[in-house]
Image (cartoon, rainbow, N blue to C red; front, side, top):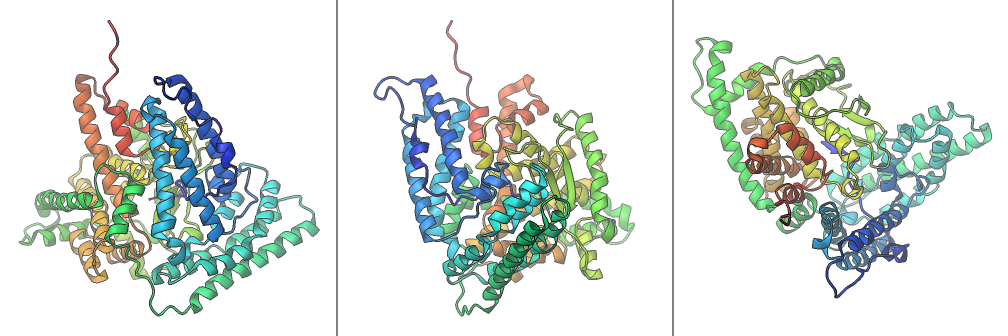
Length: 594
């Protein structure tokens, strides 16, 4: 899972007149003027981003644009109305361009911007999650980013934090006013994540102050303001705990909202219903293949013991036996550290991709403010901070019971931990983010498509095994099929829960008996589906679209096809939706005159 790379859009309307400068198409009424249209579009993009960052300082910080680090905006009805007005005006500005007259890269930017502006209005007018999702109100991540990233001298960053903290009490007071009929599960998540990140203000900031030359009186002002920030956050969580909500909104989106959100967020060629249907068929195929491998491996591990007649029991017993091979709880992170050089060497030896050794990858314990959604994730540098760290966030098992830790480690056994690191790091999310930051278009990064990123990570798992990773051992292939079932069942689960009425009991049964997951993993997935929506479908949706594109591209190129060339060409488009990349990669070359 990839975090903190993609967008949150709560823009306001200030500087709209600046943004609109240069937007009108010159020569309207005449023939297409390609050069002038592209030049005007470039001006429009730059002006749009300038205004966007001023009105979205947290988002700007996350992508490496640090001009407004000291600003914290207050969420309220007025800011939402300005956002709607902004989106409408920008949509009108876009409509002034003839999209087909733009270059290929600009056409993709145009479509991504148009989709985002439509999505923004839909989120405010139809979804209205600002009323029922208390976890949306959390300032800690941005403060942690400013404190931990070395993009500027520590003294400057700490002073930005001091200025930004001034609005924290008002931010959380306004948050309380916006919340109506909140989802119970999201209320619990808000409490967990806000309290989980308090060390940023209570400990980390104080530790950082000692490393600066800031005068003692000024340091006291900073620590006093940090104390007020902590109090505001604790007051917010106490308010949430005490909030009487006899008829809370269900965490289920409902079919109509879900289908719309899928359309805007995933930007796939198929509907959510169609992707769900495909996932159901994929699950059947995987079960068939897993049964074949299990029958082959059975004598090696069970000798003459009778083989279960039930296919799912057969697969389950084989997976359960293989899952016993895992690291110790306190070795989980160190085992991941040791895997990265091995994955780098394999990618190079098979010539699958060109890797950039100059881009840092930092493996760290998952920060508290990220806790509660996924056990492992990537946080990549933003497009304005291309030299920044890429973090492989690994959930800690500290404080877990022996039984819970064992269940988790059986899930992330010696086979799966390798596939996990392929997905999250090399050549998955980490490598994709490096390529994305090389792409010239900032729009493709700031409006980056999650299904493309997640789909790429899943695609690389299969690509690595197809290239011989794991020495073509059937055990590794079986465990990858089991892992791949996660992506498939993520889609089935998410759609069935949010568009249907799948219960927790039904979900846990599917995940443990049909996806062969450990109880701890299944419990965690239920929590995740109850606090997120649509994102879980991005893995399989993106994977299927990428593999379909690769097959079509291979047919198009014929004898000239090379896997490395496909991979690098695909990644060169940045984090654009696969749907748009497909259109570009399969487009016919323009005919040249004789």
